[in-house]
Length: 452
Image 1 (cartoon, rainbow, N blue to C red):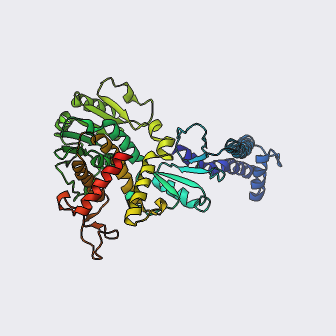
Image 2 (cartoon, rainbow, N blue to C red):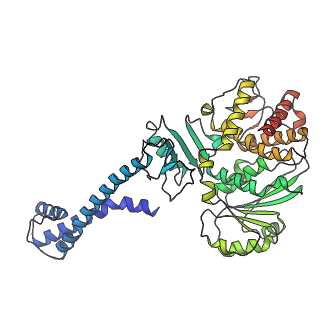
């Protein structure tokens, strides 16, 4: 942020010697045009007047410094371009990472990466766009869309929901908050717990907190008898507003609390898992850790060196490290995405739907990703749970995904199963209300997941 502010101020700073020098020459009695010319000449250490005062002396020293700095910056830019080209020369796998943040992505051996900021480098084979806001990332993509047409492009998103995005050909979207949430729930792994009644507290106002809840609702399905209470603690009511009619399709429930509610501390004390998705003051964090007792407190800490690392309570677990999230495996070589692509191809061939992954909308891409993600849970549960029960839980997950993406039950007038414009689907009902044909689809999804 500071770097961008300074960059915007540079032109004005460079003109300060000109204005000061002009004022000095005017004070000496020069005409305005002569004063401007004489002051400008000082940028090139070429005094054309014998006039002298403090203003002129200031300009005599600072103007050449501005010129020298400009020359050095120009040389640095030329050198950077040469260095980047040399680094990527003859590399089969080359990546340019564009960002306004100090990011360092962990790449596999053999991959050469450059970090040119916002200077587009067309000679790289792959382009990763990871700005501090989705607006900046998409704006950078739009500015260079034509240049990227024949390139492989990856865009990291933090705020926008993938399920609401239009199709973007030849662009792979990296859901940063969703990736953090998936890594977290895979670490917690409630499906490996022996308990069916669980209490989870999610504390935070950010999109990450909402993603943790959304992903958790889709992954934490392991028993038809389960009862998970998700307590969402936030001043941000957007999730509740957007999903006021969210159907969970089982005994799970979502409760909402404000951070200033006194009863919240009792909820934290009784919780099996507490997740803090925002950076918090240390005194608050310590209070949460104490109140949670022996139960785990997961605290979002993206950067190493966080003071929270020094809290000695053994129930404190840090998550969301940039070194774990921003990796080549997560961004480009996504095993999860590949599984989703294979899943889509399977159903496309069987039901004559869109097979080409790049032609799918954000919603249908996200749908396949959610299915493939839950497949990892199914692989664990299938050792002890019957296919029929797994099929019922898969249907619950499928319904939750649709509800979380603003669909609802409805019977389309065209006689088909769904209407993508109205976001209605006739199969958003309890499992026992499905036709045998639709139940067979859920069983098929279970078999596919188990065999992958």
